[in-house]
Image (cartoon, rainbow, N blue to C red; front, top):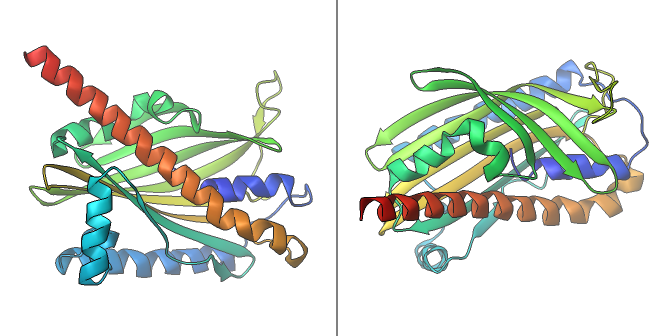
Length: 273
């Protein structure tokens, strides 16, 4: 969901309003990137590098954990961004720490998909759990952003949950379809067909990791998004946004998650008293 998608949306006010087609070679390049990234994630988990901060050398890693425990965020850009044929891959990660929370409390909030419209508003305008079977879910989100223009996207995701050990959990949210809405809020509102959209966001894969330790739960969001490429004439204006907007959105999502978990945990403790 994240954060990264705002970079794509901001292109709306920066590039000519013309349709952009997702070409087969662009989709194939994204799939190869995801395949390699997911393989590295599995390897990291096996090698006890569950969070992105675990990749840091000893001293900066200790400092990063200290900052997280003091309520700060850890944000990093994995690629800047990756250029592929007729497209851009935006890859960012962020971590927050929720003190006194338990893994079960965090998962209860995270898996409340119907309530995403409240937890993550205004970035998520509508939300629904479509299907749930075991560790697999299908969800719908209407993603919304208003800046120079208003952009809304109907997005469907498949969510796959994985338990590593009792204190570690991962949820991979992979988009299966993303449709740009035209004439939002009007009687003639409709979804633009593939090839007739603006290429703000073609793919969005978000990987959430949760680890309970140090008297709370670390929450990590790492997202990989695919958008159209940026014409060179606009690069000087877009490039600063590639850094600032994803960071702001990551912080918004992590803050919203932390607030929702803290609120639910406080309510539960008061109920038990």
